[in-house]
Structures are given as structure tokens and as C-alpha cells.
Image (cartoon, rainbow, N blue to C red; front, side, top):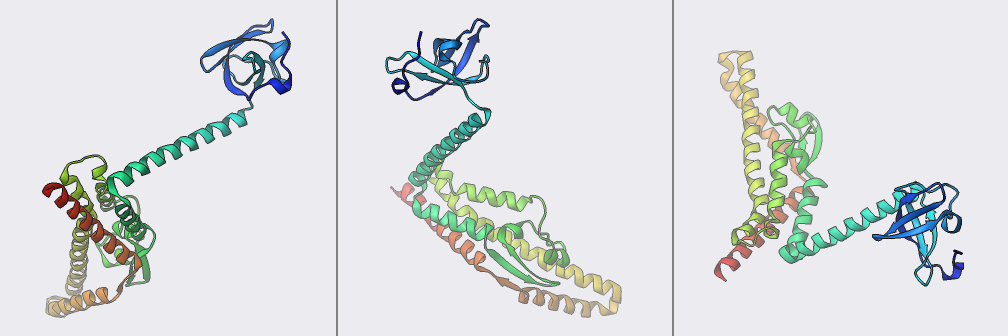
Length: 273
């Protein structure tokens, strides 16, 4: 059997060698179809065929086997990466299509602003023992057990507050998984979380200041208790004066309010309609 002329050979396809004998005869599978090949007429590589190796298989215009070539490991890796990237793009496009259909562009845009405000832009500036700025995500990881740690720490690990904030963001997409009218109220979750977390943070800061004042009173004696209480009040005032809000705070707050408004509006439309 003689190979076809180069002009008659079609574009290569990927195959796998199923069998190969020392006599030079073997078989290769392409798209589930087996083809016999002869190393003398069909093999086009410097290395010998290996069973289960991936090869490049070409056919002539008549559909007969024309050539079989080994494929370099680096080329296979590149093809696998390209295939994975293509699959990821297709899945991303499908997910985006579902998100647009279930949520709408305005809600997705609000979610994007919410995420940018929480993770990228500074939410608050703190001037206590040093001047520091935090994103909302970093703020969720801070400890307010003491004023010093609140002003100094950058947050470490993964806190429960950060976990629940991610859940609040995920709740905005509840309508993608459920058509129940109450699923629309999931868009209210970020605003509810921000209100609850801010209230708890306020209480912790106030408690930290009071504890600091009590500690001073214990050091100075009972007669200085009133003075310590006044100093604690002044310290609390300095804490609030030392705080300033960044663009992240306004983006976060505005986006969460808009999402809540969309959620309530959608819930009303579904229940009334």
C-alpha cells in the first residue's frame, strides 16, 4: 500500500494506538473506528509507535488511512489547556446567559458594584494608634475586642463574618435556583447583613472603650472611677472622630439598597401577579 500524495491528504485527527506488533503492523482508533496501519507506509515519526500513545492521523480524500504521526507531549499539554479554556468559556457563557435571564442586567451591575465596593475600594479609614484604611472585606476580618487590635490588625484567616457576607452575596442569586416569590427577597441579604454587622461592630467598639476606661479606673483606684468613665466617653468620641468613610462604603451601601429595592419589587410583582 502506497501513501496518498500530499495534496490529497486531509487535515489530521487525534487517534490512539490500540495495538502494535514487532512486524510493524498495528491498529489505531479514531473517533471510535479502528484502522490498520503499517509502519513502513504510514508511520511518519522518528520514534516507534507505543500502545495507548496519542497520534496524529490523516486520511486521503477517499477516506483511506494516509499517515500516522506521534504527537509531542508539550503539544498535547497545549491542546488540553486550549480545550479546558474553551470548555470554561462555554460554561461561563452559559452561566452568564442564565444569570442575565434570571436576574437581569441591572441586578448583575448592582452586584458588580457591591463586590467592587467590598473587595477593591477602601470602606473606612481609622486613625487611632496609626492611620489605616480597610476594605469592607478586611473590616469583616478585624477584631474589635480591643482598640489596639482594631486599629492595628489587618485581619488574618477566614472569619465567620466573611463567610456570612459571601452567603449574603450568594443569596442575591437565589432566583437562579428557585422560582418561588420569596427567593427574590434574597437580594435584601447584603443590606440586612451590613446593618446587623455594623450594629454588632458598634457595640463591640463601645464595649472595648468601656473596658479600657474600667481598666484605667482599676489602676487609679475607686476614687478615680468617675474620671475613668469620663475618659472612656472621651475615648469613644475620639474613635468616631478618627473614622472616615471611603468610596467603598458608599458603593457598598448604594448597591445593597438598590439590590434590596429590586428584591422587594420583584417579590411584590410575583405575589400580586
